[in-house]
Amino acid sequence: MTRRPNFIFILADDLGYADLGCTGARDSRNQPADVSPRLDRMAAEGLRFTHGYSNSAVCSPTRFALITGRWQYRLRGAAEEPIANARGDKVLGVPPEHPTLPSLLGAAGYRTALVGKWHLGYPPHFGPRLSGYQEFFGFHSGGTDYFAHTGPRGGKDLWDNETAVEVPGYLTDLLSQRAVDFIERQDADTPFLLSLHYSAPHWPWLTRDDEAESARTATNGTHTDGGSIETYHRMIHHMDEGIGWVLDALKRKGLDDNTLVVFTSDNGGERFSNNWPFSGQKMDLLEGGIRVPLIARWPAQIRAGQVSGMPSLTMDWTATMLAAAGVEAGEGYPLDGVDLRPGLKDPAWQRPGPLAWRMKHQGQRALVHEGWKYLQIDGIDYLFDLGADARERANVAKRHPERLADLKARWEAWDAQLPPIPEEARVSLPYTRQDIP
Image 1 (tube, one colour):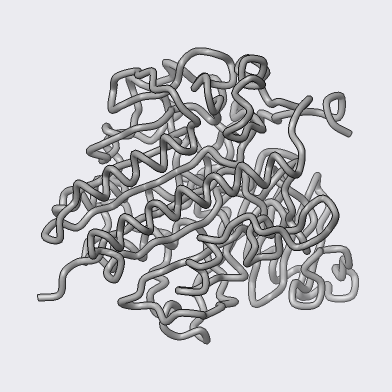
Image 2 (image 1 turned 90 degrees about the vertical axis):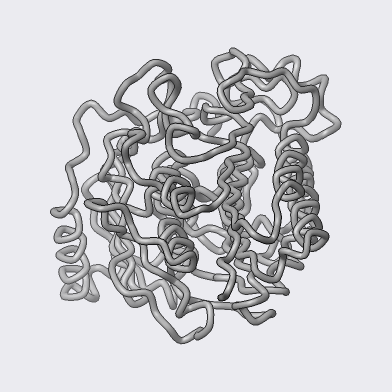
């Protein structure tokens, strides 16, 4: 009997498409930047996707899609862009009764752990261990200081299961070390799911050498008065080094061959990110807000050195992992994600079904189909040929009115199957033009 695979899903926070060496990272002098040697090696040993999309242009909605394998819009909490100060709220989170990737795998005999960012509702009504994770070490809010371990509005936010803890150290390293510890405790007889959800390279802009700055940023919210490209790249490098520790631990345990490791970002980058060649950033349904780095490594199933142009969404990996484990979706909760395993073997395979998005912010809509993209912002319709114009600077809506009408109708048919965005849903922008031009 073939042993079921292990899964490690690594999620960066606000990482831009070209922020890795293998996707085109550049320093402040526009020279190639060696920021991610271990992830570059992981790409060389596996499969790098050029058309990986996040389910949303902002963090918590993407995380709803990832944990459920369904369109995030099916849950009220995901209408928040993103979940902001919702401590004690009984609605804004993943309902504990909703089947999730960890709960379904756990029921099938997997060991499950979340190390890092949760951001899917606050205790006591929501939490990682209420939604299927057997172990949790990390934080609940949308961001946290790397040394003080406080949330954006202050207050300690580092937890070991349900216990608040004070552990000295740089957060990225603490998460990497806990992930290694989890792997070291596994055995070859019991498969596992490890969700390693970094806060890096999300603000505040702090490297291992910036503990003094932490004393000021711990209550500084979005850190609009700090950071640099160099600092940002060091933060990515710290995360990359920790991912190397994780991959090395897999190899030491003899588990790397049968472990699917996926690396991606929850949305596009912002501020110091490089989203080239795309326009837009976090909060935008332009490509820069939703096209993200995506790497998969699984030596037993994926040939090394491949590059795929197959479009996919974050939630597709939920469907892929469940299918690879032989686990069915929860009764009454069919998956919207698509099993990508055929595309891991055949680069010509194409994902069926729509890639579509909507946001309350600026009334945005988007749909990608066969290389074309319909986009609406503030009531204005656009059409782009992504194959010829990935930067979305040539609006061809007037040249191809029939194609625009077709894609718009496809978006409306998709949207009609989902609950509407509630009027009370909030958009929480991290900064305004008063902070950054």
